[in-house]
Image (tube, rainbow, N blue to C red):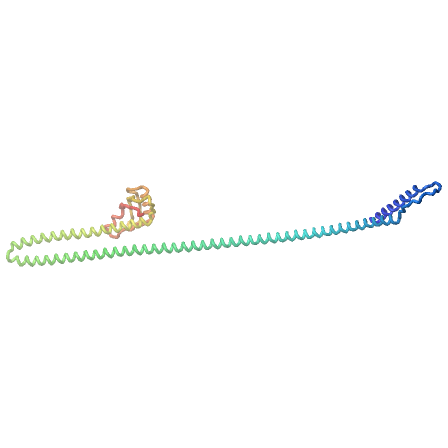
Length: 323
């Protein structure tokens, strides 16, 4: 490339010299010399032209070198910029990748933390439910125990009252018999004292007294029977109340049943086992629910006294829901 440039410069300078020489040659006058006024001839210094040409060529050469240098510098700067951009992009990509990885780790950590918190919450709720269930069962068991104890105490109290009543009745009977005996003895003594005076009157008095004794015995028998009947009626009412109470414990009622009644026909085994339950009269829906409650009870209280237990083998009972 450098040789071609120099060759072009040489050819250009040579051509310029030839042109100048030709101009000078055609401008020469071949006629005889005449005196002419002297003219000022401009002499062109070929060496000066050549120097200018060479200076121009050198300037061009320098400009070209400078342009190439600038081009190389620009290319170098472009490469450096491209490399810097590449590094910057790689750095940004790396930072973005690290940020994404960090975000992913943080997200995974948050999810793991959320799962752990949810698991802990579920476990706490489960433990709380188990605890609540245990407490509820313990409370229900305690209430049932207290209820059974209250029933037992009520039963014992009723038995004690019945025993005390029987003892009072027995004492009253004995006192009455003693009074009767004492009265009879007194009357007999009086009759014996009067018998000496008036035998006929004594005999009549004896007969009258005998009649009075019969009347007193009849009255005593009636009083004794009435007391026993009252006792039996009390026992019947008590066991009816116990039966209603046990049915009510298994009876599921709602407000719509208020004010309604139902009469059930119940058959029991000698040990109180429920054999059958049928509706006798009353509201159908109420009776159905009362029948289910009776069957759920399985057994019902039955008195041990044979004189009244027979009344609880096949009987009717009227029920009314407690709301």
